Length: 249
Image (cartoon, rainbow, N blue to C red; front, side, top):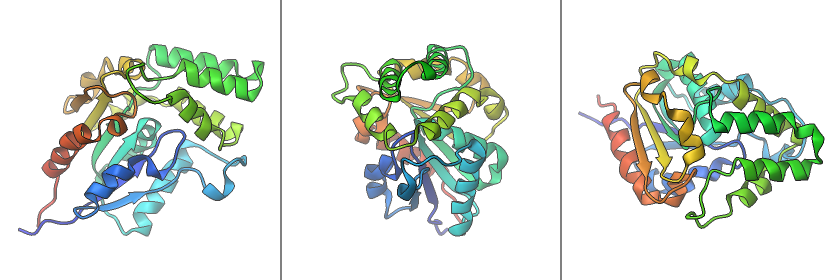
């Protein structure tokens, strides 16, 4: 039997860029075909332009077609789970497996949803920089045990986007119905969360109900970007998961 060299597509978070999984891509480049791209055109950062879930799905579909892919694994960070889920729902035969790092349920009763909805509502009450810092502080997913300033990192990358573009991304998070999309999905799913990622973990109370085949893993001493905080732990669960799904001919 000959092992087919499979493809992994990596999707980043609501801010940031295609380098979100750079460490993992460096380690996997000999075993897999790897694709990572930016949601936002680097040449138009800071400009207002259309942004919607439909456009994100079209963008992902275009990468499949441009690379001649019939199917691929999709690995995502945080917000990236939304277009990945929606794409898998629409094109299930094109997705070999899904891996979510810091993924979460949208539109479920949770502190995360309540805070995000309130912050979205009060956006017009503050100047943009003040509001953005409030947003980053309120939704800061990490604990003091994580040696990084996640608030400052978010603000830095968010400022590269036009305020209207970020607002549209937040609208997607508020409106997306995770339970409806996941219900009945039979794809292999690996869901990886950091031990300290409490705010986002609280949205997952019904995870097993909607995706009973889930492989759920928590990384010790890790926060929201768990694969960055604990890269070796992440690879120790990600690589075996991928190997279970390998196609042989």
